[in-house]
Image (cartoon, rainbow, N blue to C red; front, side, top):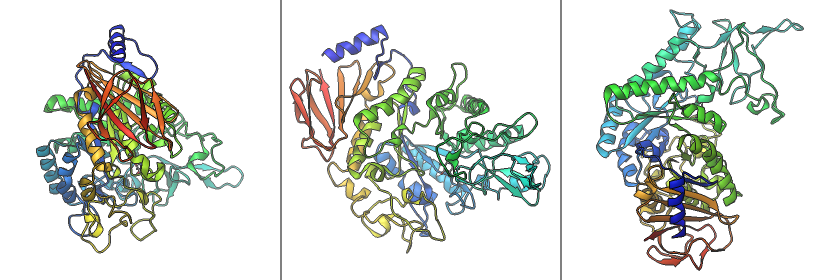
Amino acid sequence: MLTRLLLVLAALLFVATPHFTVAAAVDDVDWWENAALYQIYPRSFQDSNGDGVGDLQGITQRLAYLKEIGITATWLSPIFSSPMSDFGYDISNFTEVDSIFGTLDDFKALMVQAKSLGLKIILDFVPNHSSDECEWFQKSVNRQDGYDEFYVWHDGKVNAETGEREPPSNWVSVFGGSQWTWHETRQQYFLHQFQVKQPDLNFSNPMVREHMLDVLGFWLDLGVDGFRIDAVPHIYEHRNADGSYPDEPVSGWSSDPDSYDYHDHIYTKDQPDTVELMYEWRDYLLKYEAEHGGETRVLLAEAYSAVETLSAYFGNGTRLGTQLPMNFQLMYLSGYSTARDVVGNIDYWMNTMWANHQTANWVVGNHDTERVSTRMGAHKVDLLNVIVNSLPGASVTYYGEEIGMANVETECTEISCDNRDGERTPMQWAPTKNGDFSTAESTWLPLSTDFERYNVRTERGVARSSLQVFKGLQQLKSSSAFLAFKQEGGFSYEAVTEQVLQIIRTNLRNEEYRILVNMGNKIEKITGLSNKVYEYILVTAYSVHRPGETIDLSESIILMPYEAIVLRWLA
Ligand code: NOJ
């Protein structure tokens, strides 16, 4: 009762204390604000034609599964024509489907199926660079009709001592080595913040920006609900007035001059023009929505940037930008992270993004990062799923995290030799051949050796499996108290001990949920949380309780190591 009174009082007084927020806003919650988002890596979700690589028809066949587990929208890593040097992040034609994934008709069929299921589809938009096999690059190499300045070209510098030509600046690419590569045909250097095969487009050229708007328009016309924008911080670079490029200072974080960490990227990341570009793209979507009706189209931004920069990408009060600048804070947790650490990572976002814009999103993993099971331990998978789905805002789940997939140790093959292969292995659907991912003799990356244990079919039949916990969480996430974070309710989060995180979700209809997560390997006895009686609503595998049991919090509560529970109080 006391908590309830405090919530109401705080709402009336517009008071916000650290870790505790009550919003008095009356706006409706738009679909993306509380969405359960799910990332599909198309090569690894479902193979429909037996070639060992996932494809669009495969995704279409599996869309019903996303509905089953409570997903709002799925974003697909790139499906566009590509030489696959960076598995689709090197695009040779931005408005074509790569044949490995199928055809444009397959994509249209996918959209029809998604709409009929009420699922939203978000595509990957990769504006920073194209493939060097893109027609635009070929035209630029040959200085053809208007494409001369389509990419970032420079003559380089002549070393005064040796008389030899050198790259225009000391910039190092994200994957290591110089960002500048000499092009024999054009006799100039071109810039690439990523691979040599990924030349950077020149966004200072209005024609490039127009081409990119056309790309957005093309896919919007096919009915997509938004875009995840790749590599946002890298889109612009600083160029001096005389056309030269300034060297970046040494950061002190690495002793290897060829490593990306060697420099502080003050001239190649998060340049002011990038913020303007986010507003330009959002304006384009807003105009599209106004002309075509329907629901909000969203922009997710992949930006490993300071929260103040993400806040600028979101908007500035007069201009709107990307609705979901992705929040990677919880991806930085390790197996040693305590509940207090978790609170620190939540605070980093909330103190700026929530405070300024009342928006939040939580990413658990992606195709560039080790899976939770590997990063933090198999026993922490459910804990992370509980946390990201209990906090206010959108959750972003990487395929397979809902069943506790782990990284796989892979070896280099002719198809792939990428240090990120381990988190990109085929989805584990069933304890049958290739996990029911493919009928091929071999798959592009190997299945995990544990797929017979961690797979959708098996986990459907096991009470308290990761999959069951995930489904239960999605039901809660779409229920009133979890939706009411802006309109009428409140939430709070805190570390009640070093290892126990508590999240409270409540609305003004006498509903209150308490989520307790024991991050530690010891039994925790906690007193003084509340003076009310609660019901266990959701329990994870480490719990000794059953849903429906009650607990009087005016006494004490015991949490097992790695136990996570959701309790409900009803007046
Ligand atoms: C970010 C993507 O997530 C990553 O997979 C890719 O290699 C780079 N951008 C380059 O596009």
